[in-house]
Image 1: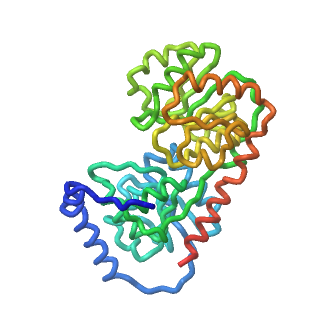
Image 2: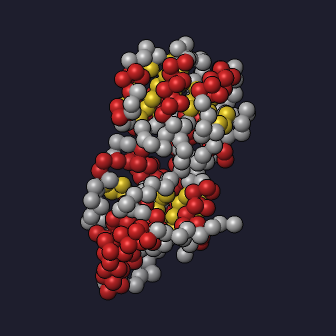
Image 3: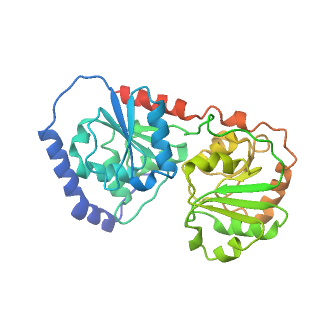
Length: 345
């Protein structure tokens, strides 16, 4: 049974006083200038911000637009203003959709599909705020069933949700033979990441070389110790186009030890690279990993003492074809499923 969310008074007050009137004004303008059209969907705009261009969000909108059957194009704008005219819009992040409504009321007359990776609530973009906006979308893509259940509990209409595990590019990420030395992570530093586990593994496994692809790790309290460790390499804010070569240096991939996760997409990319995965039981990891067969699943509270034996065990499974388990989750298949959502009423 899904328990309904009861928003705190302060949260509702902030939304009603500071934001809701802006959306009501946008809705009014959308209705005043609405022109009925029975034209079939012909072009879709995939939206992210300028700062996303060289990071994962930028890659996602480019890949989805590339594989769409429609005339798709990515659009990058930090303030999300002046969106191009289109038959539909795909937003890579829910906050972007909220902001775009206020600056582009006309999109409310089109089909809007929003990808919801994981909850990230702030004072400005509270649960009340984001859910109110998402109920104005045509569809909300959830990366796993846990996220779907939470959004419905918060008030999102169930019929607006769709689960799509996405996505990876089998033409970009290539398999390599595991040698049993490199251990990799792909994760930005943040509060929801179990940074302590990463630090402890580096410190207690001097025979292994550890790599992090990410950003903001300089904000971690033990960063100086990590960066000076002889068995650690940090790829800071790397261009996504280098990820395939970087993943080929990993034999074992530890999916970001996260207390909250939507995907994580790097898990699929690492598996395409034939890295043996060790992943926390969050996001879609339990959907694609069968413990002991094509990877290992760990609790978010796992310590280095529990993970080290799994890394050692992974070294003995060099003949397991990990790539084959990730092939069904491609950008092409995801794009085609999203296309169908734009076509459905």
